[in-house]
Length: 286
Image (cartoon, rainbow, N blue to C red; front, side, top):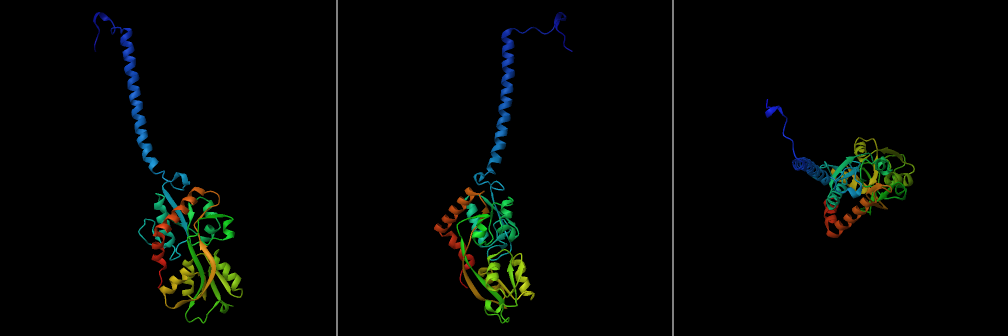
């Protein structure tokens, strides 16, 4: 243990030495605080990168989250290499739109009825809906739609040996329709004597006709066309021009910035020819 000579304590500091000592302490504190702020700034910079698209009010920063009823080929079905696990015309088109907005794409499989009613969108599950959804006045009451991106027809699919040649032959027949769709509405209005059987999606409709549970499917022509291509035992006997156009769906009154951005990106894809390239992938002539 060190002892000071003559039994005294440490030598007293004069005023100048005290001032210098205090300045050194304050400087040390300032340097430490600056270093802490610098580290926090670096950390904040990393997080801000994930905030891409904040102006759109996204469910997840940097990601365009899409809800879709899958499968509904050729519009949405499992597969592809875009990282979502799904592909199809709707999905590929939205992947191109997401890239235009500098966003990643994510897809959630949901029920169509809740999606087309606006319930799923209002719950904040996703940023938009894409499920070959026809723009109708009824749906507009609960949903904001993008500009149309696809024009469609309705169609009637039957077994080739069914004897059914037109919608007039459906009296007493079990006709499969997807719940909440324009195909269901068309069947109700134009095949009043048919027995309509509702299914949640095409994923149940197609196996039902193959199993003989229903005699026909009335739904969007591109989807029935996929079934006709897949199995020569089935054919489309009629198509119906219902002046339908599909649109991407948004929660009513909540996504104006995103809606405008999607419309602009869609226009750019049409103008550049990229839309047509995606379209031709799925709808080229046989």
